Length: 105
Image (cartoon, rainbow, N blue to C red):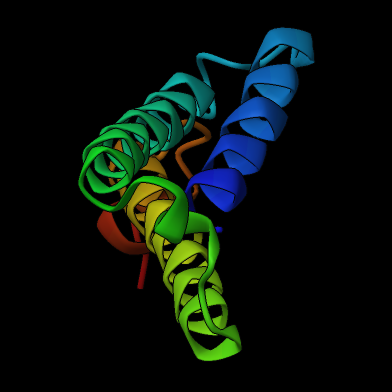
């Protein structure tokens, strides 16, 4: 489930990145790369775990599926938080710079 959730997030972020006119301004490439990197990591985890467990890999309990789903949601949420932190640090529209640095008394 973790792999599935991160791949879905990667595909959605890629579509948004591709169709957005301000993709560079909002650092959508950073978000897309984070999700594709996470998807690649979970793909390798799947390959090695499947090589070890074979067909038993697909006989997971409901608790294991729930844990994997929560991990996937956590990874996607962490990616969004990191992306927002990068976006706020870059401040493409200068909102924080105007409000806090160029603050007039």
